[in-house]
Length: 442
DNA sequence: ATGTTC
Image 1 (cartoon, rainbow, N blue to C red):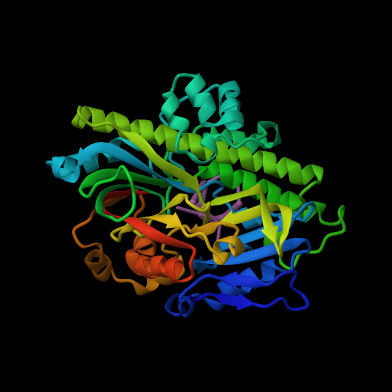
Image 2 (cartoon, rainbow, N blue to C red):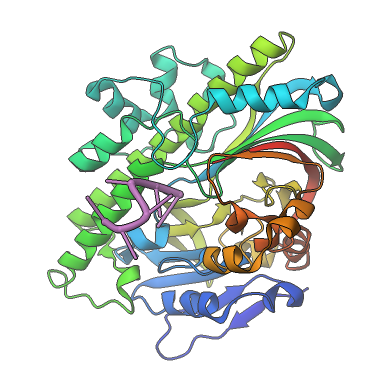
């Protein structure tokens, strides 16, 4: 078994664990590791862990888990800008062999899904209704008749983050968000058709099944919430007599008014993202129903990888109430399953949790994807269009963005090495592998 | 990630 432990030193509040193979560890930038170690110096932090897809982020690295004791820090920067960025997998009721013309599916999906930076929605909501969606997420979509009751099942939090408080959200965030439900966004966000390539231990999936994976989050809405509260945290620093190791890890006391407000606004963004992925599912359903009347779109699973939430865990034998920040890390309870998307053109995985000392040390967390190997700037500079095309193989990709070299598979770590890292560090193991068929990038 | 240097 391989994992790395960085013992608690005097400026740290806890040891830091990094769950990675040596091959993966050697690819992790020093800056990302330093960010992870740095997060353990915040007062009141009890647990810090890194996943094998660790890379540099804002404050807390992507792939980072940071948990605070009661009235310890709640840090908007540690959750990040894309609150409740997450991934969902849909069953289609079809086999890949049922798809006669991939280009038609690709074109119809591309027409139906608003994608790209600043792209607006084709749906309209009154402000009252939008705020109800922020308060109750998918529950509201069901009550309003937009989706069936089944939309909440297999969705983390049942698509309804309980602590959401739309009144803690700024006017600016409301204005940006109200036009962005049912949109994909940009960057690493995608809708991908996938084939179940192999199944070892996953009920109700068979080789050859056609699946749809959706990766997106809370768009400009979550971004604005994050911006607002990072600014507020810098301003309220003196009020609570705090000092930050870096401004990017600015935080509130969890039990302060501002801390509770952030959790409420973050929850509203979480519900926005659950609703966004749910609406996109309906858009995908519509396209499939038109092209393939026999199709039957069902939610297989949906979960977030950017969020903070209250959880109970044992730390050094003592049960504690913790505020667990996960950025680019997925909660995975023993016995549960998680989706781990690769980069475009490579495979994705469904993993099952191990039940081990390390799953406990990680606070039941797992990787969220392949993780970048290089920065976006570096990718655009060093990856040639030719090498990028070659790396895609025969996967059809269309993109809203002009230059997607920063999203090339070549810019990401090898997903198979990330998965094997999870295995050898005893966090999780793969139960199914999914291969891309075609991909709509944001 | 992001009305991508508000």
